[in-house]
Image (cartoon, rainbow, N blue to C red; front, side, top):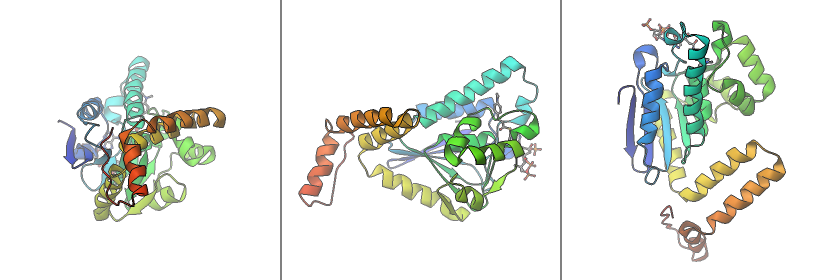
Length: 258
Ligand code: DAK
């Protein structure tokens, strides 16, 4: 596919944004291709997805400034909606999504990584929301997700100052879970994805839904969401397999996604 490559390795899918000449900046074509690539992920077979960028310099250096520069108010709203719809889709995708941030993650790139369930990065990664320096606000969810991830004070500081931060600071403020030398990033992402893929897929999906949905509501409502999704697991083959294996002192478990 044009700007996005998709590859399946066993039960792990890898989406690579492939527009290195523009540091993988998100133009409309990239957004369309990402959407189409997600359509092609068979979530019955694939149990975890990795999103990364082509090359060793940039994950995504932002939304495409050249394309955005001449937008009207209406066109800008439509562009924002296109990105927001895509990122909401990633956030609630049926399987966990890991962002393997291999360099610049600026503006829309930082926002894309934040729509993923988990972020890990290379030691040359740079994160930031430079939009206010360009005369705009973050428009692909940055004003919403950054505060949820790193707290309101740090999110406001990053967005108001438009100052980029390096990998070690991203780790310190909890924007990423781990930092690796560039060459070790994809092996680490695959190892994590394979670890997720070994667990019961319906349980993982229900846990994702419980965390995501519960985050938006009161603790009481969140507990009710959790109870229902927990209960649903008891109608699955994989719950019987997982608990049966423990009780039978059997190491091997075969989760069938049923
Ligand atoms: N857009 C378009 N092209 C980009 C780009 C970007 N964001 N980032 C890099 N490129 C292109 C450069 O123009 C250059 O192309 P050529 O000149 O070679 O044709 C090529 O990639 C290599 O970049 P550099 O030559 O600049 O490379 P350097 O190593 O010197 O610098 C850099 C790397 C990442 C520091 C620099 O490229 C840079 O500062 N890039 C821009 C970073 C940035 O400001 N990103 C945030 C973009 S704003 C909204 C919707 C969305 C958004 C906001 C609102 N609504 C609809 C409401 C999102 C906004 C953003 O993401």
